[in-house]
Every structure is written in structure tokens, then in C-alpha cells.
Image (cartoon, rainbow, N blue to C red; front, top):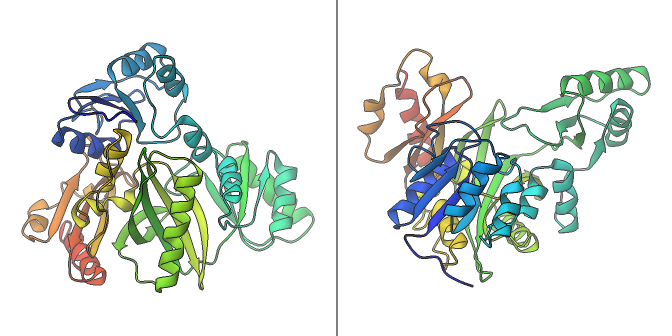
Length: 384
């Protein structure tokens, strides 16, 4: 278990804000970073990295350049061409987490099967490759159903909610229409979970098998996009312990070296796993201020073979900043910066578009409820 020390080069696949925050942590610790962006130039991660490789993930020359200069490869997104991992293996560069984990997380059907194999609770589901299979799935699942593309789609994209349908022509017609709307691709249909709360647990696992999490976070989505996170979630102790236990089981079962986010629903006293992401997660942004060691530093430590740090979070809340805030011009940043308890993070994206994640605010307070109230008030002041 060799340890990578500065100035080793961390190769990051993906040029978004998660890669940016990882690169910033790496550089503060004396490491260098190289980012394969997927094609764009001057990306959030690329603008702070030592090397930006602005090329598609399947560009053989660009992949060769990345694996030639990197001492380890890690990921800021899972829906990528896994040829990067194969090229790295050919020259002996470690990939953490390994490509099999990304193959699981980037396909919803494969992911569901892996979750079931790990023995964690998931919503009843069916796979469908055409309208007839989808109609059969709607009938088998009954009640409202969420139909999603097996691959791609995020922030509420690539999915359709289907209300309870009647047998016969109505169900068949609904299946045909949904299949068309989602691009006539392979689908997964899940019975809608009538949840009380949405949670996430961000957990890290080191090369030696050490496991550390950041506690249980409570999330609120608006229009399918994460809007706020508060930590620690206000939950019965048993529910919180069960959520953390599920996250530990999955990171161990999947043999992840790096960071895993597990998204869960609470329904009554029961937990249902919704999705996983083998990387840092938007809901974990609050760890930058809340914890002694953030999710990004945990990722760095894990992939470099170092011991993990203390992930315990103080009461903190995060509010997402979407491109909608720029509709009437530049937000009033001075209104936020006058509050010493509120921290502003901007991602360096050049174009603000509705629904696009442009940054976030965090606040550390005595309780997560006070932190959430304060951070939401700060966001309101940006446009008032």
C-alpha cells in the first residue's frame, strides 16, 4: 500500500465543480493536479488545475497524456468512458475508486441489482427495454411510478412520473408515450416512495479499509435539483445509525477506495436507498466548513493511501446558488459577505443558466435549524 506524497500528480476525470474543489484541496496540500475535462476548455476544475486536458473522455491521445502524467486517477463524475481506467491499468497507474464501481453507479439497473446484492432496501422496480415491457412494469408495480432512463439524466432530467394507470389501453398508451418522451432507450421503473424526508450519507474508505462518514444530512430538492442541506439531520438515533450503517456496508461491499454518497428516503421509521454516487456529492459541500476534514480532503487522502481524518460535522446548512439568481444581473455579493457566519463558494462557470449550479452558501451555527434559517436569509439578500 504505497503512499503518494507531494508533489505527486492527482489525475481527475471530469472538469466540474467537484473536481475544482478536489484540486483546490490537493494544491493546498502540495499535490499537483491534471484534469481531463470531457471536451470543454477553461472548466471549473481546469482553471485551477496545474494541467487542463480539454478533450473528450474517449480521446485516446488525451487519455494517454492524462495517465502518463498522473500518479493516481480519480473521478468527479461517474458517467464517463471507462477507457481511462483501462489505459491507466496498462501503465500501472492506480485508479481509485476502480472502474467496476463506476460501471455500477452509472447504470441505474446495474446499480439496483448491486444494492439488492448488498442487502440494502430499495424501492420495488422493473427494467424495461420497450413499451410492452414498460406497460408490464407499470402493471406490476401499481400506483404512481417514477420511470427513469437507465443511463444519463441528473437533477430531475431523464425521468417521468406516471400516475396510477388503469389496465388495458390506458396503461399501454401511457407506456408508449413515456418511452417516446425518454428517448426510446432502456428504462427502469420504480414504485414511487412516499417519503417523509430525503437524506444522504457521505462516507470515505481508505486503502487500508478504514471507514469514516460525515454523519447524516437532510436534503430538500426543488424541481429535482438539490436546494438545501442541513447537518446533522434531526432524526431518531436509531434511524441515523441505520443510515450510517447502510453507507458503511455499501462502501465496503463495493470495495471503494475514495468517497461514496448514499442517498436515502425516510418513510416512517424505514429507510430506502435511492441512489449512490462514488464521489463527493453536492450535499457534502457543507463539510468544507462543518468538518475538520471535508469530503474533498477525504477523497484526496483515500486515493493517496493516507489515513482518513475526522469527518464529524458541526451544525451547518448549505443553500445552492443556481443560474436563475443571475436573471436580473449579477447577484449582490456584498449583502452576503457582510455576514461573518456565511461562506460563499462560486464555481467559476462563465455562463449562468436557469437550473445550472453556479455556487453555494454555507453557514455554521448552534443548530442546523438556525444555520438553515441564516443561510436562506443570506440567499434572499442576493436578489432583494
